[in-house]
Image 1 (cartoon, rainbow, N blue to C red):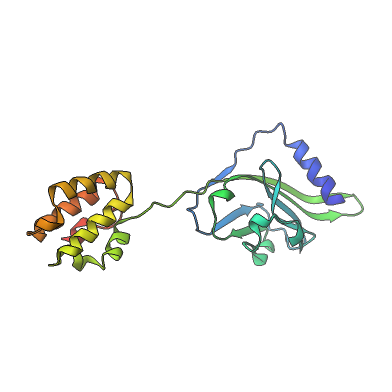
Image 2 (image 1 turned 180 degrees about the vertical axis):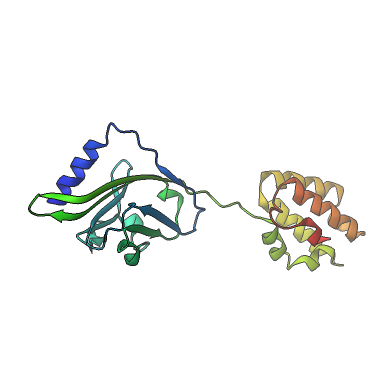
Length: 224
């Protein structure tokens, strides 16, 4: 009951205060870690902690009361994906891990912390609030490494079989809209049935990779 009253009181107190939330941008299916330091070495292992996603209906990400987790209050969206580092709590730090993030996890989150309740003074020795924004980024649909893998590695780029070049063109078409357009051009200019100079074709395909920006970190010279 005390914890509920505290949460309502703190939330009411900060309504008119502009807070600058921390923004996290993990990629889809990556693991995310919330880093929240209370700037004190206070032991938080017996603290009360509430984190929730501010959606149309509040979705509890994690709840702990007097050091005891309350899994029944957790929204099913986060079930089995949340872990709190207990060792970090002992030195006044909060490290909360959320595994395999999805677009559904994106949104504004609110955190409430209360520790060291004084029964005589009827107040908490430490209270803190934190806001953060989780913006899950969708991973790119493909890069050069995916293409090399799909075609069996770099040896196929300079291979002697027509089918290898055709496979590369097919993969290029599957990457996205721009690649599809370029793939159509290739199919018009270099029909698979007329392939003769594989070294020249290899250079053309490398240029295509450059034009659709999917070579990223891989040096194109590695393909030559």
